[in-house]
Length: 577
Image 1 (cartoon, rainbow, N blue to C red):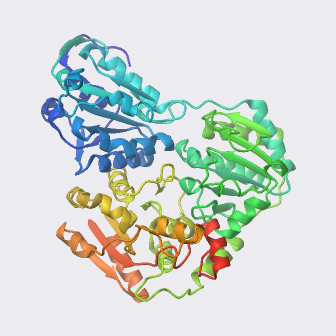
Image 2 (image 1 turned 180 degrees about the vertical axis):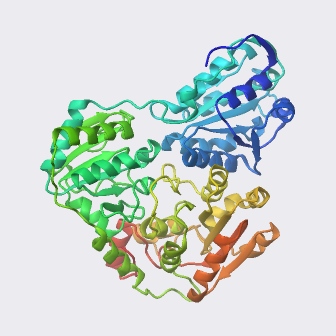
Image 3 (image 1 turned 90 degrees about the vertical axis):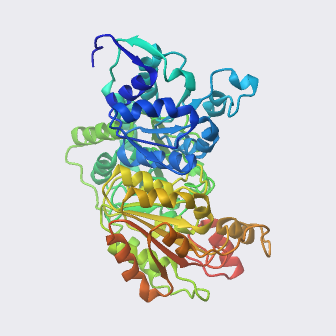
């Protein structure tokens, strides 16, 4: 867009205009004294919807999930007293390669040196978890700096950009003649560089020569919206596709070539065994972290395998495994060209069809039919996930977080539609993510939202039940309760061999009554016979629903975590794998 004629505006007006020019429709945040000057102009002159949360942390996670679900940079806002509260969501976005434009208002520059109330060096605070962090010091520079913010956030490896706005800047006026946006930076990835052509050919040759190749997609493939390209290459070469937990859904999990989730957070034994036995592994958009690789042990001796790796972040390529071929480029663009090369240079290629349907079905049925006895009063997470797998609409968006609430759906829930419809925070892994992520996803899509959370996590976000109710969105919260921080309890008992972990259990709460107080439609599942009707009714309800159920802690029934399962076998404990 070309620069327009000179116009005199104040900083608040310029910020709003630049957001509008970049196609921003929603901002997540919470008010404070240092942002009143912005709100005054906002109310007068902008149609951007402000999503008022009850906690800045909620706003930060909601914004992160919104960006994941829309493919557009999200905008987050917080005042100086709550500036530190946004760090969990910004850190998750930074590690997950999610673009968030984060505005934090502030007291006047250098007033913190006088010990002005709420003063802190915000720039230093966020510099380590943002791609850039800068301060607005005069109104005339705002259009330039905001174009830079969107460009930096959405280019290369996407990530947050932090913008610090001193309170006195909002009212400052300036003549500006550069009120324009660069439209390509209103979505991400803004640019799609294709990896080295010779290296793409080398990957093709390695996959063709392998006896048991596999493609492993991380969330970078979802960030690149590479579903069609991944599937095209996989079908041309008949190579199975496994995903990390965060990459779940890159292709439909019902597809014959889908291996489903692998790794230490929801990878079933059949899938982990398959990649362990593979002789060639092609990583696409994965940072090969500890979770996705079972602490880098998943593939056995790395020097006996052929590894290839494609990622937009050069620091990720070859970071943890020795590579035969390393490629830096956008996943979608590079795989699209790779498919073109296969068609052009391997015309008439005929590969024996690979169909994993029976392998997957057998593994799933073995779990679904296991009828593992539950402790008294507990509901099987397996049975709940089995029912959801049958009744969820294809367009549903599911949000989860670490613990029982994530492991079972990661392993057992089948995403029947490709794309980013399963949102987790397995980059940082902090508690309290799923509920605000459900809120963010609800503003990103008209689809029904199903949120899995545990009682440990729920304690972080109860206040924003009011936000969800006020939103009027179709959000169903499924609370798995066991009155403990179950992951830590499981880790201590199963791996550290303690008899009773210290400081993991907490007091019981009637969460149904809490949800009722916020105006939710509520239910409590106390028997398997109630599961289907209760879940169906909640998902069909066009509003806020809350379901509580008692589930066993991870040390009682061991879920799909390979190191835990190995311990459970030694200790004679019930487990799923």
